[in-house]
Every structure is written in structure tokens, then in C-alpha cells.
Amino acid sequence: MFEYFPDYYPWSLAVMSAMNRGGQISEVDEACRPLRNLQNKKGPEAQEAWLDSWSRVAERVGRLGEADEAAGHRFSAGRKYLRAGLYDLLAERMPSHKHPRRLGVYRRGIETFARGIACRGDAAELVEVPYGEHRLSAIFSRAPGPGPKPCLVHFDGLDLTKEIIYAAVAEEYRRRGVSLLIVDHPGVGAALRLQGLTALPEMERPASACVDYLESCQDVDPARIGIAALSLGGYYAPRAAAFEPRFKCCVAWGAIYDYGAAAADRLGGQGEPSVPGYAEHLAWVFGTSTIDETRAVAARMTLEGVAERITCPLLVVHGEDDRQIPLWHAERTVERAVNSPDRQLRIFRRDEGGTEHCGADNGSLVVDCMTDWVAERLGAGPPSSKQKSVGREG
Image (cartoon, rainbow, N blue to C red; front, side, top):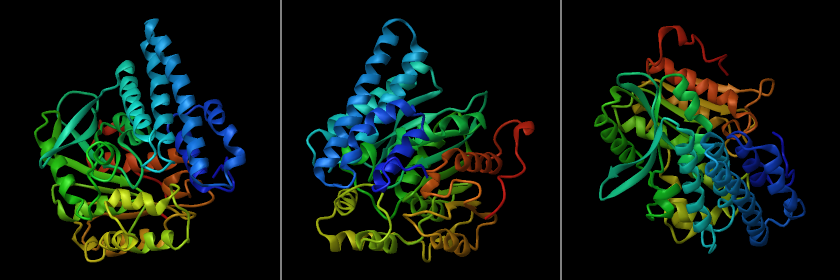
């Protein structure tokens, strides 16, 4: 993986997240160059500097978008708004959730990103999914053509948002005839930041609410609904598929078989965290007050005795050099999913790329694999567009 900050994995991971989602290298360098001498400090001061630098670039790019829009150049404005929104959302990930500016930067990011979707005329809209007494913010990306289409519910992970997912995969799924419902479920995005909804091990609850919602949509085929999620979603998606039989396929974009074990490694200083202040971030996501409470919630997030309940096709993708989650999580997930009629483990190897966490080093390889596989399993697109293989198996 290209490491702009060789001594600081979370910052380098964020840089690659930007590059895999439409960031421009000169703008990314503009945000990162002032931070080079801070990568070894890694404390609150460094994270505030990250917030300042990335949000400053986001503001500048957003102003360029405003100038384009004022001139009537909506497509050009939209591209800039999408990048500006992405930069703000990457900016706000680093400091503590208690930072006084973080929420404001988040709000600007999602508003600017939505403006970008609208200006570009993407076949996408912001929707709300009823979830008990709450409503979950989501982006519905509509596949082209007449008639009901297959649709994939897409969840996030520990620290991403629906906008960051959209930037990575929406266009490729649309090209393959698959609609997407990308949801800020409890524990992430707007659900956590604006409603205080924390993550829960029983992720089938919000997932089932998403299926209920999609079954009411005339442009969605209720018999062709799947689920996918990345990173911590490598637990969320299989868990949801195990307990929600209406899902017709499942993708774990990076596996997590036992998050209790993975979290214990991170909290014990083993492996790389995705964000600074991992223990504090995890407590925020889970709504816990002590490290013991955090460990207890994480320990409940296991596919032990759960993977066996998956009865739909299952794809698990994982990189052999994943520095956050060891490969055994992927191997065990597929091994234990004995009742899936079509289970595949796709390991991305060093000789091809995509070997880091969720393919951070080359996201396009992993996205191609997943979108082809889902399109095949959900019967999307005209027959001439169907691919016969998702690539070699690991």
C-alpha cells in the first residue's frame, strides 16, 4: 500500500480511502503535506491538525464547486462537491468525537456530498428507513432501465459513512443493473452522530427494517435483495443474512468472524487500528462507559454458532496482508457457513494487489470482484453483460 505517512497507519489508510473514492492526488497532497512532521506525535494535537488541514481543502474545493454552479456548470460543480464532501468526512474521522468542531464538519460534509449527487444528476436520492421509533438515513442508488431491479442493502463498518461507501461502489453496481440502499445503521454516520443510535450485535434488526422498506418500493424486486458490508460489516452482513431469510446473497467485504478477539488485539496493542483513539472510538460506537463494557459488547459479536444459519450464497473477500484483521477470520467464516449453497472465499494475493484491509491498496480490484459476483447471484443486467467468473479463488 502506498503510505503517505509511513509511521502512521490510520492516516495512510485515510489517504488511500480518498484515492479509492475519487480524491484528486494534488488536493490530497495539499491536505497532507502540512502534517508530515506530526505523524510521530499521534496525539490530540496531531488529530486536530488533520481536521484543520483536510477541512480547509474541503472548503476550498467546495468554493470552486459553488463558482461552477453559479455559472450554470452543474456537472462540474457536482464533481467538486463530491470531493469536498469526501474530504470533510475523512477530516472528521480522526479527532475525538468530543471535539467541538467535529460535528459541524460532518454536517457540512454530508450536505456538500448530497449537493454533488444532485448537481451531477446521479440516479440516487436521500431516503429514510423506518426503524422502530427512529428513521435511518440512507442513499438509494437506482439501477437504470424499466421494471423492478435487484437491490443490495449496504451497511458500513466501524468508522465509515454511507457517503464514503457510495463513492466507492455505487456507480459500478448501477452499471451492472443493481440498485443500492446504503444505510447509516446504528453505530455509524448520521445514526450515531445525529440520533445517538449505538451499534448492536443483533444487526439483523436494522437489516430487516431495510428489507421491509425495500419491499414497499415499486422499483425493487423483493425476490432479489442481498446484503453487503465492509470491515466490521464483515460481521454485520453475515449476521444479518443468518437471521433474515429474505436476503438472497451476502458479501463480507473484509471478514470478521470474532470481533471480541479482534478488538482484544487492538486494545492490547496488536495489529493496526483504523482510527486514532481506538478505545474511545469503540466506546462511542457501542455506547459503553468502561473498557470492560466495551469488551463485553465486542465479545457478543461473533459468528460462532451463527455462520451455520446462512442459507444464501456467501462471498467473503479478504487481503492476505490485512494488518487489522488476520486471514483466519475469513477462512473460518466460509468454513463454518456449511449451509450456504454457494460459498466462496476470495483472497487477494500480493502478486495482484488488493491485499490490505478491505482492499485499501487497490480498491478497484475488490469492487470489481464483489459487483460482478452480486450481479450474477441476483440476476442483474441483460444476459450479454453477465460475467462467468469473479476471478481466481484464493
